Image (cartoon, rainbow, N blue to C red; front, side):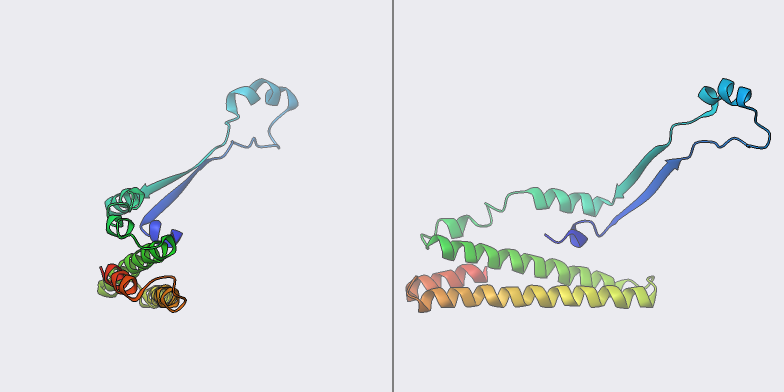
Length: 165
């Protein structure tokens, strides 16, 4: 999974509490020794991450098993390699759909700086093109399995129907 999609709606606020520095011109060794325990703060470092409601829901959805959506593939009786290819096709299609929705939302955003918007649109279009190439490769793998007689013409038709879902 691409990490940019998983965390596309997060923000963070770094929190650092620096230790106070004594004014060296006005401090004697004796005053440093007596007050160092009381005035020296231990730096507290951390990052606060705030996720939007949509990001939290997406994260929860991503953690749900895909078994239900792939039950028809698993019960099809097709060879294991064909089943793996079909599952890959479905996952790639899901990712393409997700990226297309992100692109539509981005295009509808009228408040974003045009240069930033252009950059983000370009990145999403590139991701969609890459996923589409992966989908074509996975579909070609099904045809190759049929050509190499690893699956029958009937099994290929069944696989194509499952891939279309």
